[in-house]
Image 1 (cartoon, one colour):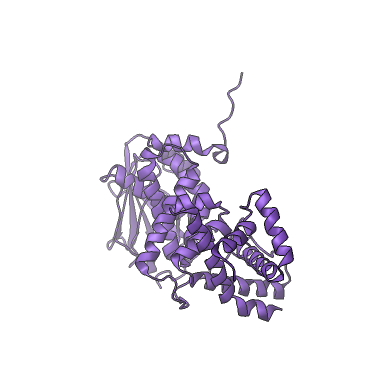
Image 2 (cartoon, rainbow over the protein chains, first blue to last red):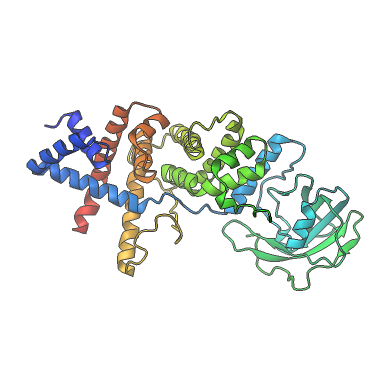
Length: 208
Length: 203
């Protein structure tokens, strides 16, 4: 019958944690003991299978959202009045074209804008979180019964040219990103920029 | 003389990103999140085998790390420090859920598809029937790990997946090196027992 110390020698050999002299002694003992050798080989095979089937790295589902949620939490903790969060529901992400993103990154607090995107199935959708990369820009969302659209209010953007093309995307968990029809209005509700000409209304029923 | 270009985010060392994060630069911290989210998520997923909970626990680990960053003296690698935070949170969660060790297959477990680009993507070139067999073996291994106690599961993951040395495992848990060796031995014995039929059928 083996002692706990012999068990420890076995796994230290397996994990390459034995000093050279002890390792040599253990190998000699193993060569003289077929049962110990069989046990050692079985454990080595198990270790090989574990390493092969349990990857060290896994792709994080919705990795961008993973990061943005962390940034939202950090922003909220750093300045609780800055970040806003709407009640839970499906989550929605919007994207700006590169030129617009650069504009939003500017620090000037000169402009308030309202984006509205429309689709029947969005009526019961709630935006879970919003994230503005520039801390000078705040975002609020709600569903407007009048407009029959989900509205994203961005406060703090610098003024944009009226012909700035815009596009929005909707993404829900386990679903591909889909393009939305987007309209931009200024703080008085006046249409400010034209929707991107190639933006198309959603046709998939995302509410179910 | 032209100014040298700014380094790519992947080239910025952890120490610099940590210093910037400690100074309140959340974008530097975002780069650290991107750099380590896959490894931290893999650990939480292997520990609890539920995609949603693992995602939340991994995220919580990064939030806790952000809060604790001012006290991080860089006396260990950032990842080692982060891993301990994530591990402690996951281990506590496991203990609270009391799902460890009593041998019932947990239906809430969710299977994770391994991306082609993952660090370990075994048998990528195997024939379809061989790939299927390997996928089944992988599922059986994960099911067997789910039946280990939290104590045994954590040492197996630290040793076999993270490749941590005994003294590193002992420091992370924390416990003695003798305890690490005992837990590893019995965890492996238990896994051998649980996978006995699988190996015998494969012969």
